[in-house]
Amino acid sequence: MSTRNIPPDRAIAMLPVIKAFKHLSQKEIEMVAAACQWHRYDAGNEIVRYRDHTNSAFFIVQGDIRVMYHSLSGQEVILCNLPTGEMFGELTAIDGHPRSATAVALTSTLLASMPAPDFQNLIYSNRKIAEIIFKRLTEQVRRLTERVYDFSTLAVRNRIQSELLRIAENHKVSANVAVISPSPTQTEIANSVSTHREAVSRELKILIKDNLIKRQGRDLHVLDITKLSQLVGEARGSF
Image (tube, rainbow, N blue to C red; front, side):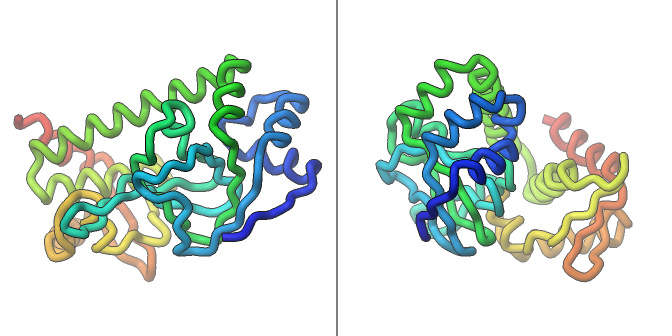
């Protein structure tokens, strides 16, 4: 990790890539830029660690990060991947509690960080940002509630289908087709749904045989999102 000195005009030009800042005025962006520090992380670098006591919120200006933690047995559990434009660390910046997960750079990543007091002042002083943060937090609760339901009720193969559907929804190239590029590894999918790589391999082979997905180089093509959604919906509805 290296700390960067970013000229104010360049910081102001880059920050609107963050979803929460897209509709801010020039003056508001300037206020945000004045409160930020800048950091460059290489792929694989740890940004924050589970249970540490740093309190800044982070904004992903370039690159991708992974949020995860490790179980007592040492198994990696992937919570989510976040691309350019997203933020993370806002929970600790709001409540002051230790970090609830570890964040690692997946690619070379440029981050802007904002200390907790400045982040809270930003929320309290700007209704638009407050509304975006509130909606973001409610989306997280809904997503985690869905995952708890899936882990508690779905068979392993259905959890794998649900994870593929979730990823496909973010990589659509048409109404019913998605191209996930690059494809997550079987181990990454397994770590996202609390299973093992062999189970993922078996289910992918079945989905390929049923013409729901196909591999092409490093890409995974989801050929029928509607059908995949029906499979997941039927599994959820059977409980």
